[in-house]
Image (tube, rainbow, N blue to C red; front, side, top):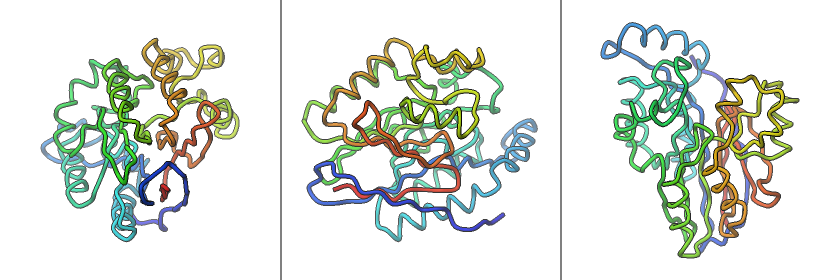
Length: 281
C-alpha cells in the first residue's frame, strides 16, 4: 500500500562542528514481515500489525531515498521493526546494507509477539544477539564522530538507562567533543508530558524520566513500566549537566514535536509518517 510522501521537517542547530553536516532523523517504521521460517502465530501477528502500519514498506524506501538525495547518514531512533521475525531482520539488514544507518534500538526491536510480556532486560536478552547481528553499529551503546561532533546512540527503549550505558557516556565525554544523543524514548520535560496527556490524550507520557509525582493518573502497569530507577536518574542528571551534549534526537511517541530537556538541550522527536532533516553547524 502506498501513501503520499513522508512529511519532511527541517532543523538547524549549532553544535560546534568543524564544518556543517546533515543527519536524517527517522524512527518507528514498524516493519511487519513474517514468512514460513516463523511460526503460525507470528505470521498471523504480521497480518494484524500490517493493518496498523500499512505504509511501513513505502516509508522505509522513502527514508533511504531522502538520505541518498541529501547525501547524509540516517540517524534511526528505533522501532525499525515491529517484532522479531526472520523476514523483518532480513529487511533491516538489507536497509542497513543499502544506506548509511546509525541505529539506536527501540522497544519493538526485541518484541517477540507485541505486548505478550513485561519488557525488561531478561526479555530483551532473549533476542538481543539475533537482532544485533543485522545492524552495523552496537544498537545499545555506540559512538561515531562526524565533522568533530560525536553522535552517541543509546538504547532507552524500556524507559531506563543501565550502568554500562552511563559509564559509556561518561567515557565518551572525556575527550571534550560536542555530543548529540540518539535515543528511542524522549526524555521527560513538563511541556512534552502535558502534550502527551492533554493534546494526544494518552493515559501516560511514554517518556523516560517522568517523576513519580507526575504519575498519579497512570495505570499501574504503565507506572511500573515508566518509573525511573536510580541509574536512570543518575544518567539523566549527567545528561542535563553535561555541557557537551548539544542536541537529543528521539522517536517513540509517534508525534513530530520538539522541546528542551533540562531547560537547555533541544530535543527533536520525529513522528509517525514523517522524518526530519537536521543540519548541524
